[in-house]
View (tube, rainbow, N blue to C red):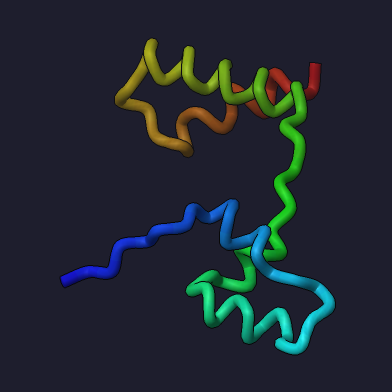
Length: 81
């Protein structure tokens, strides 16, 4: 039988106190929360990345048989313009 998590990830992260009797490492262990999850800071998405992803999607819809090696030269040429 698997354990059901009652608290969401956000709630568990909020429960960790930076100043307390237990270390943050131990608090993460008790809450079954990976420390990398606790310390993770999301990075903002850059518009240039969104443009590149859109171009890759469009190319894939045109030529789904192409692999990454076939797509790379076309995108490298477009970046230098």
